[in-house]
Image (tube, rainbow, N blue to C red; front, side, top):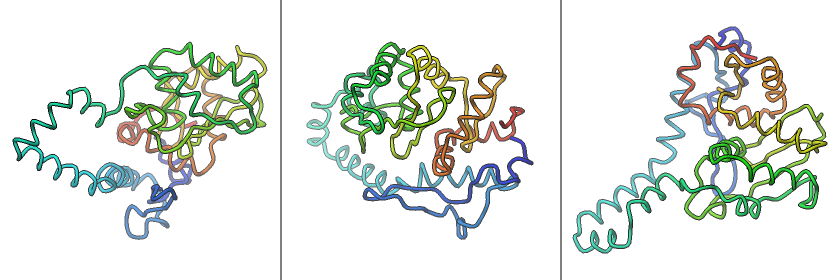
Length: 264
């Protein structure tokens, strides 16, 4: 990552992150005075470490402690052990902890999606679900991740998510690719003129070789057309999304911070 670009506040980040609490969003400082501490080339590693610690350790410490205590109570009582494991397969426990590996149901996906600017009978919506239905299992997971930051659904499917999903119509040029507001489960795109154009745009955002860090899209020896899209896609994201999107790739930022890839 280019140090000069970071020091020019290109990331627009401070030492805070947003959490959801009882249906409302609140900002939590990663360290004392974090609201006024700008991420730069010297402290970016500290920012990533603090973000990971708060997101994946501190934020769930109480829940994990209660789970561990409850599981310990079960394991310490032979009667509870028998009743617990008799009705639970190993796959069930894996689903509860990791999420379902089953094929994503497009019908379930569609049933839990609402539209703003579009209506369900619009030809673009019909094209969209037809394209999604033709996607491979991995492409569907990548699209869901791009849309929501979730790659594995809970056991209940889309009904187990905290919110319904939304598709928003934008007034942008047809050349622009879809953008997402992952905090609000929103996918945004213009009214593409043909199914071929829409399929091409969705194909690009479901390619695994398009990567991000700190909400800044980077090129990985991609053709010029993809580099142009990366630049456009970054501009399509609101500041809110730039601040939160970095959580998607927090585990990869350490490597990318020192990589030779160019910032677009």
